[in-house]
Amino acid sequence: MSDPTAAILVIGNEILSGRTQDTNSNTLARFLAPLGITLSEIRVVADDQPEIVAALNALRARYTYVFTTGGIGPTHDDITADAVAAAFGSKIEFHPDAMALLAARYAERGEDFNAMRQRMARVPQGASLIKNPVSVAPGFQLANVFVLAGVPSVLAAMLDDLSSRLTRGAVMHAITVTAPVAEGDIAAALAAIQSDHPAIAIGSYPYYRPEGYGVQLVARGVDPAAVEIAAAAIEALLRQVGAQPSRL
Image (cartoon, rainbow, N blue to C red; front, side, top):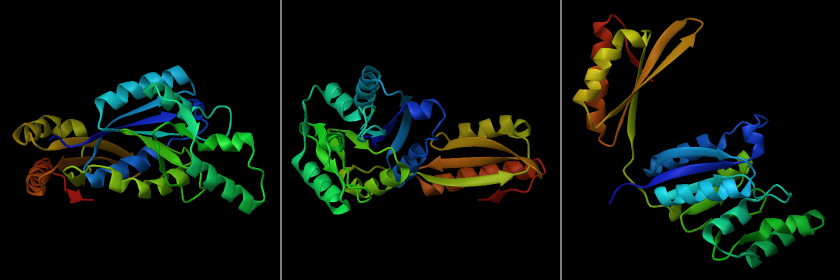
């Protein structure tokens, strides 16, 4: 059996307009990596139901898991639950547990649990709730799709309820080697190292800082011994061009 894969579907006009920066994808990537789940794709779509449905259907057919962020609040543009229901051909309904949680929350705060707030209790038929310890309004899971909040602090808190639901894969190990050298000076030799270590993914990431330029070279793989061998080869290459490598 191959290791599990994942995609993130970020939903919201505010992301596409530049008004809001997407930090949720980074949070999810860091959450998935230690579980051995490979994040293979991130898409961003507008608050447009046909576009959300099309993207969701494409991603859920291709990857083991899909995580959506955004669009499950109380306002008119929060259409993710409806889009997920449409993608699965499911009816959408008020979940009794979600209704009870939200009703108690607003009663405790002395606020009206009005019709728009009740929208946050609507989920596709057959979905299970994802706990939200911050604002109570739950996310939900339907098959291999996990629908999460867009507010970063809320999304991060929801992740605690996901670990037990996910199949784990082989964890990737990584070693980062850095040196003040130009990529172009080592590109050909680095390609040769990659060819010699096909099971290891080697990435090159240049940087430009006030004190000068350099490069970070990252070796990634499931076998820590093989990662170490590839990293040692990278360090040897850097010394050959007169640079002093260091590990981060």
